[in-house]
Structures are given as C-alpha cells and as structure tokens.
Length: 566
Image 1 (tube, one colour):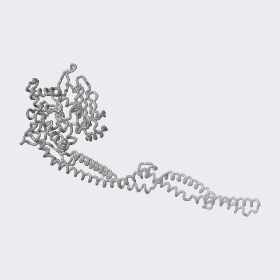
Image 2: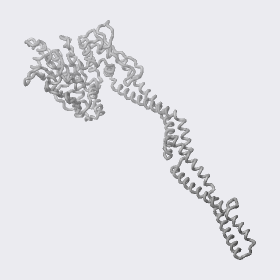
Image 3: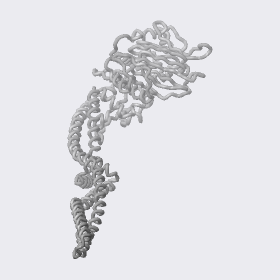
C-alpha cells in the first residue's frame, strides 16, 4: 500500500532490489502492520532481509552480485512522523528534509559503490549510525547488539520512558565536559605563563624604562651625525685659535707685538707706516681669535651630548640583541610582553570563573543522574519481570532475565551506571550474560520478548516506534506456542510496523500483508520472485506451510480455521 498524508510511526514503505544474487529485480510495498514473508527453504526469504540489512549499513560481499553483473542497487523509502529525531540528525549531516518528507536511502554496490540519502552522498559509517533511528533488525544480522551494554541501557531507558531525561543528561554532560576542557586549557596556559612571569615582569620593566619613542632611533642617528660634524668643525676652530694665539697668549698676535716693539724706536715715516699696518693686522687677528673663541663656547657641550646619544643607541641595540630582534621592532616586543602580562591577569580571572562553571555544570549533571539512577532502579525489576513473562509464549517457559545496574567509576553521558542484562534458562540455573547462555534462536526470542514489552508501554519514543524486522523468530515452535507467538506479533504490529520471515502457518495467518517468496525460471535463468498473496492464494500458501508439498482438503480446512481465528 502507498501511504498518503502524515503517519504517527516510522514506516518502511517500499524496497527496491536489483542484481543481488537471485534477486534480479524486485519491488516490494509494505503495510503498516504485520508483514509476513513465507516460502520454501532456499527460496530467498533471508536474502530479502539481507538487502534490507545493507540499507542499515551492513557489509557487502561481492559474491552476492547476480551472475555476471558488476553492480547491484538497493533502495528504500521511509515515511517519517512529524518532528522525528531523524530530521535533526539528517540536518546535522547536511541533508535537510521538510517535516513529513519521505527519506529515500539508495545504496550502490559492486564496481562503483556509494550510499545516498535523498541523493546526498554519505559514508557507510554515517548510514550505520543513523540506522538505529529508522529500523530494528532481529536475527542473524543484529542479535549481537544485545551484547552491547549501551544497547541494553537503551532498552531499559526506553521501557522506563527516559528518552528526554537521557537527552538532558547528554546535554548536561557535554556542558560539563566542555567547561572542564576549557578550564584545563586555561590552567595549562596560566601555569606556562606563570613560569615566565618573573622574566616577563623584569623585561617589561626594562623596556618601559627604555621608553623608546616612535622614530627616536632615526632622530638619534641624525643628531649623532650633526654633532659629529660640529665636533670636527670645533677641532678646526681650536687649531685656528691656537695659531692665532688662543689661550696660551702665543701665536701671530704675540709675534706682531714683538715686531712692533722692535721697530718702535725708529722714527722713520716708512717704519711708522709699517708699525701702523702691523697694528691694524694685530687688531684683526685679535678680533678673529675672539670670534673663534665665541664659536667654541657655543658648542662646548657637543662632545658630552654625543656621549649621551652613543650610550642611548648602544642600550637600544643591546636590548634588541637580547630579544633577537631589530631596534625598530623593540616596541613589538614591548607590546607582546605587555599582552602576556595582561593575559596572566585575565587567565587568573578566567580560571576562577570557569572553576565556578565546572562546579555548576557538575551539580546540574549530578541532579539529572540521580533522577536517572532512581528511575532505572525502579524500572529494572519491572522490565525484567515483563520480559520474563513473555518467554512462556515463546517456548522458553523456564527462562528469565535480570537487569543489573553496575556503578561506573566516573559519570558518563548517560548516567552513573552501566546496564547488564543477565539470563538463566532454568529456575535453579546461574545468572549469566545473555550472549554466554542463549543460543542463536533463544537470543532472537529474547529480543522479541523485549520488543513485545516495549510495544506495550504507553510512552512511545523514537526507539520504540521503529519498524521491527525478524528472521525466522519462530524457529522450533509449533502448535499452540506458535499460535500464541502469532497473536503476540499481531498485537505488537498494532503499534509499529513488523516485517518477519516465518515458516509458521500460525504466524502467517496473523499477517496484515502476506508475501510469498519463491524461485522461478525467467528468461532462461533462475531468480527469486515475491508475490503479495490475497484470499485463495494466501489460503493455499498457509495450507502448504501446514501440509508440505501435497496440499490436502484437511490442510485447506486447517488454513481456513487459522485465518478465521486470527
């Protein structure tokens, strides 16, 4: 049937299989209730379920390709209820579906391979991670999941209606872990900088004391060049001053005085003119000497200023070498050290703040965990009793399970304990983990009993509303036990879609939709075909399941009785 409008549970609507061993091309449309696949052994019933398992992320064996084909294609269409958690998970992977839009999974296998959800490629690991949200498969493909402690916890939590509480626990745990990680990072950084704090403080003091101004190095170098030029000029003036007489009262002016004195007794007019000329020269020389002395006095601090500049430039270069940088980049070192000093103070504030956040988030987590532990403790005995009660209808009258809550050393995202389901098959037997005591068939029946219990709880969750797929759940059953199982499966199918491979006519009679799987020759090759049975054809198949190859009137009458009783 094709579903239109909205649904209140997850529904596998159609399944398309092409070139998978004997399944050359197959299209199946499923109903919302109990869908039964029957047929002779080896017809290909489990192969259909294998194809479905591939859409749930199972590994592919290339030997399963049909004949000479090098590629198989499997696709399925799921109807999803409004607001289902899967919409959010798909959106996180970049696959945005409108609320109520169908999910289409397609897997290509063989020479070229790929996985697609609504034509968006995803990884096989990603598909397997999503599969728990759109189907539960019990049988040879999935019974091993019951060995996983987290899966056992999910079963108990689903029975106890703790879905929202566990989601809150995960959220609180993430907040706590994030706060712890942030605190660890801040503490590690703070300790690292604290080890360098004295160096940072000392070096920062040095650079602040240096007080290097922008452009100062160029200014000092210009001043040094100018002062050096002045000093060289002063040396010239000093030499000139000494030649003219200078501070030693020697030089040209003194010599002129001596010449004037030697000629002063001679009254000859020509000599007098010479003495006058010498006087004029002496006066000019004295005036020149005074001018040179004035210039020397103006620049007498030049050498002292040069020493200060040289010392300043040396200190700047010294600190630049110390920090392995150029003098021009010392301000960057200063800024970096100042930032580190400020970071030390800021980290201290952050450490105090994050310490409070860690405490607050841990208290919130502890509060949620306390509630989870209390509810699990109350629900574990009820869950175990309900599942154990179902065993009687599954031909395991002496079996029972017990749910153990084992405390964890550290809190986890899902609580303070791990869940372990143990089992015994006789009243006086030892309790042992399910996988270590249950056979393959018993394991599948344990899962069925759990599914039956979850199907009856009032609080339907995303996990308890998924399609259930069973592979020969009724192996080894017959008569009244098989009839009870069929009735329980039909009851379960009132709240969720069920797909089951069976050899039991009692279960087949309870089907809402009955598929017959058979081999037939098509275009010279043997292939598997699947037919939806109605009315007489369905009666004939149930009669065959009762009587074998030779269908008798009694078998048909028995089939009619089963159908009428279902």
